[in-house]
Image (cartoon, rainbow, N blue to C red):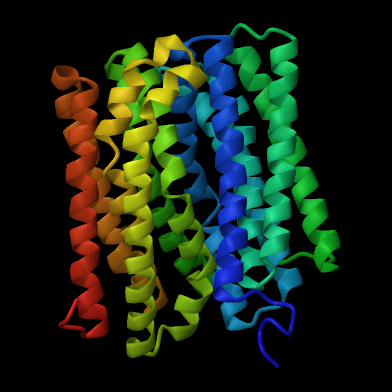
Length: 413
């Protein structure tokens, strides 16, 4: 019986569902940013982006790489009910610790974001995103990508309801905005957990990751956290040591750019289990990575060209105050090409058991990015952040290319 006959997803079908779920999530985030920009101003956008960036750096570590561990556990044949139990327990505990920890840190050190806002955003970025993300990864690994899309749709619906209420009540502060978004995060996490349990017919029972899983999860968590740091540290630093208005413009342009590599992200995520399955076969995993890499690069190129053409629409959507975001989006139009190719070479390293090498390359790129931002932002402003992004992202791609060749023994890449 074929996979499709068994009710699972083909490569194209799984990727299509995953792409739809990514667009739903990114689209909801885009609407949220538009509403925030329209209701308050570009400084509020910068503050919220900085707060979310901090959570994206910390929360994956506390969640112990649960989304990737769920995929790995499915590939090993672990019982789905145990996987869900582990995911929900780990993510919930991690999000609580992360929210309280960042709030405490914000009360001791000036992070550019108030402690109350940090804790409220933790319910959104930590609890909701981590819970939904882990359950979606599990659904896709089980070849039930439609379930993952339903989870993302539920999350988006709750988020948009919160945005609607914030709009109707005329929220005028970042704190008030964060309260609505944080409340939506708690509701989202609860609904997602109940939906997944009912859809899979599972019962939560006490379970925890094995020591081997914990060690592997730690590497996966560092990888996810470093990836977030590579992508988001510039936003936090621009808000803290740069110009707040420029940070808001940069956050909006980056939000637009993030839409451009959704298809490649979704395809990479939907095929992660396949990389694990083929990891021992160097020829097969190499062929998969090369094929998907060409697809991702082509999609990224088309998306980059689309950004160059459509960038003038940004102030139409976000407001006249964001005219500067047009120029910044065009300066970042190359990024979807690089990111879209990175994903598959990175997955090759993970699937062939070289997660440590992937993490080392990513952490190194993140460190370079952070150091360059600290040096360039005070003198070059937002252009310095773009230069730092270019150097670090291209360096990471080069490292993945070299490590991928070594992992597969391929001399023709």
